Length: 389
Image (cartoon, helix red, strand yellow):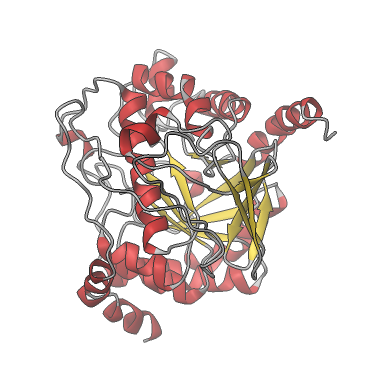
């Protein structure tokens, strides 16, 4: 009953409230890039006046660079931010915004409601928990009744966050009603939170996100980039950090739209920075960025994004990489683009090691044991180079 009540309350009224608060709707795409979002006027950078553990981002048009400025604000939980140390990035210049995010003094803190992960010079692991019956990765599926045991096992293997989802984004995946999806994820989230585990919910349905928020989830993981005003309203109401992902089209239908890019890194970065700016303007928790590996992108596009990852990391937002057992990895091995072929474990480990070396803060994976072990070497090297070992 509580789940159904939560779903009913995720209404259009919430979206209207956000719109009324002054959040700009997403701008239309320009001619230079079919799906590139652009931001209009920006606001002056503000810090310390918000109690939701996020520092506002923005700058007047007359400001050319924010410079290397460190900021810190005090409230509970502790939160800090810093201006982009190298001035405005190209994406900030294109969008007309710059400012601060989740770093101070070179420290990257991932704030998740009342919890914090220190991701300074290291990459954390997010373990995938599918309470679905049609995920293409069969061994990741688990019944709701067994989900807590699986979550504990993932945490014991090195996962610091458990990503809980029930609705497959695959083109052949079965559609669930919001009631069905919430009934699967909310009890698992509640049990994990009671057990002291950090959780995220993998959903693009606002009603499900609200049920998850009421169950105590720590992070919203939305493959549609929090473009639905109702989803944004939930992130704001519960002061939740949200991971925004780049994808043309809609889940299950992203292959039906044009997937040819003029400049893959420019489009993806512009979209993610614009969405992060919108979340900060609205008052949500700290935005995370996910380039959307494998979502409507060719193998060549995915390699180009991996090669350009350091530039995305330079924006000083938490960057999440989700490329575990994706079809493009099989394609790179000269196989089909299916997600159940031999060799995807090794390809997944390799890809995530490269992403970690490029500065990714979190990797979302099915194979927690193997990836965690591989990353321990990368993390050790990164921390030694930073003088932290």
